[in-house]
Image (cartoon, rainbow, N blue to C red):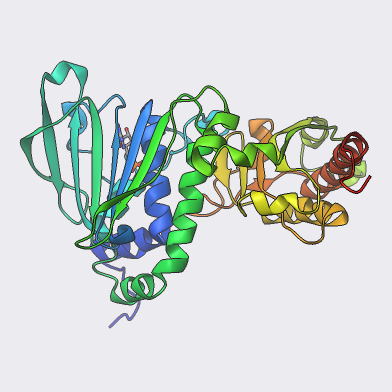
Length: 370
Ligand code: ADP
Ligand code: MG
């Protein structure tokens, strides 16, 4: 008898779901991104017991059409991408249609949604573990969507225990993710709250639909933070990568890509010793306004900052604005890793520009002792 057999499809779904939703941060990130993709201008994230009990994200976006109820949580069903070739021109956060189907497999999951045309009532959608629609019922709702995730990792006991054990560390990471989305999302009223088991609801922060990231930062981190920040506006000129010898040019558009310039906008702590204490120890990076982890870019920023201030680490809010052809978000299932084209040249150019910024700043700020 053959020993190699296919895994049954329900098991495959559960295995893959655990790779898309790896931790609490992934839940928050996927749901907030869906709300932003739905055109929301108001997003409220509500946790119970730091998310262990439940996470609810409510938005005032376009809602879900009844024709989509059946398929919304099925794997690889998405309204955002239909062919691989669309990937390079993507303007939404989501594109793989995996988040909701994964959450059905990993939690007690439901949606309440209402569109303008639905009148004063909304619809509650309940799902099977597979993502298949189990049933609908009417529910009180305003225009928009509430996605509720209860008892995350209910079927992955090891991961659930780990989450409970490390909840302090996880919570810090969750806050980092929320701060990043709240700060970058101009024109969106963003709020977050947590209710401890049997405790009172505590507001974590709220922004006011501000036109600038600067005002968002003031709302999230306190107005004082702004006093210690310098605006970042760096234009990195990316020279073409050296052309390979004619013989090994199997790849084609390299020259073209290499010439594209990169702009970095945002805010960074002034490199003045002592001031760092006033700023929260937060570093946020974005590629075309998409929050992401860029460890090498972070390292370059910190290295240069250290040349001017060895006692504190800086607050950084840095958005890399670059051509959509010069990076790849489709590297890991949770989309947190972004592959940047020509990264080492970019890092060199970044360091050079930062040094220039800090040098210019040094000359304009009077020294306290003088
Ligand atoms: P993706 O975001 O990659 O498309 P998801 O599983 O996150 O995949 O979502 C599936 C689909 O459900 C989306 O393409 C979108 O059409 C719809 N959707 C999800 N969340 C919302 C929301 N908050 N408001 C309106 N539609 C939503
Ligand atoms: Mg999504």
